[in-house]
Image (cartoon, rainbow, N blue to C red; front, side, top):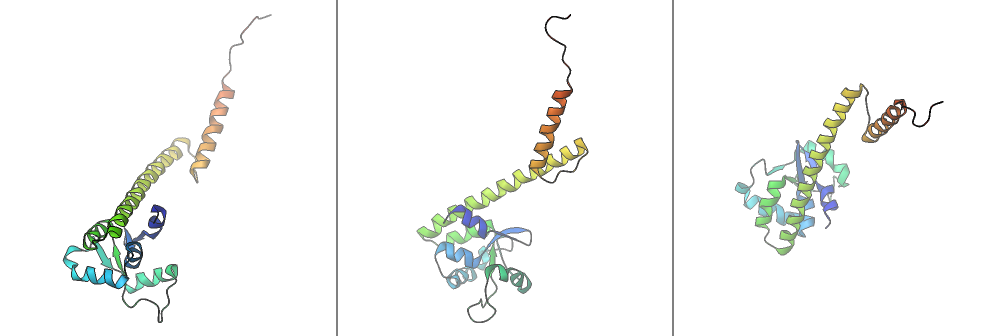
Length: 168
C-alpha cells in the first residue's frame, strides 16, 4: 500500500491524527473483529492518548464518508481510533510480516504529515508577515509571488540611471 493511500486514511478526530480500526484491518490484512479482539484483550497497552472509541455522534458524522449502511452490512460496534502511538503499540501485538511492513509505512505517513503541517505553519506565518509589511491581504502564495514580482519590476523601472556615453 502506498503512503498516499495511508495518508488518505488518516483523519483528524478530537484534535488528533488517527486511523480507524477497519482501515488498519485492511492495511494489516486481518479481519476487523480480530483486530478489535486483540485490542480488547490488551486494553492496558492502549491509554486514551493511544486509542479511543468513537462516540455515536462522531461515527454518524463520518458515516457518509465511508458509505456504510445503518442496517445489515453496517458496523455493530463503534470503531476504535488509533493515534500514531496506538498504531505502534498495535504492531507489536499483530506479529506478522505484513503487519510489520505496513506499520513502517504508516509511521512514515504520520511523519510526512507532521512535516507538511510544520511547513504549512511556517508558510502561513511568513504570509502574515508579508501582509503586515506590505499592508495588503493575500489569499494564497501565488498572489504573494505575483505581487512581489510586480513590485520588483516597478522598483527597477523607477531607478534612473546616469546616462553613459558622450554628452552633447
